[in-house]
Image 1 (tube, rainbow, N blue to C red):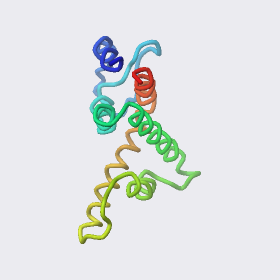
Image 2 (image 1 turned 90 degrees about the horizontal axis):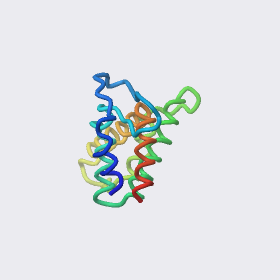
Image 3 (image 1 turned 120 degrees about the vertical axis):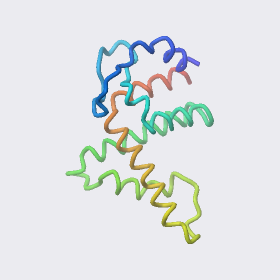
Length: 139
């Protein structure tokens, strides 16, 4: 696939920054993602969706997380932080049974997972945008 080829051909462009907070570095011509973005649960989840479901679903998920990340970046105005958004969105995103005794535990785990996806999308927004562009080229 084009995405895999781009990753293989441009692996030398990945920044090996040791800072987890650094979102991007380098030029706009190449496909640059920090080494820390490549290791995020968001990137791993997107790869899993791409490989096991479809490229279009992975792209949709990435754009949705990007939107939620933008909302949390303006939480002074929106009054919605990552946890609040995740609590609202997680039950609709995942299949689960809210009736068993363990439902609250399952909801907490789902919320934590979605909150991490939202936070990753906000922190690594530029890398996520570039990854989405590659997904669309691959589709």
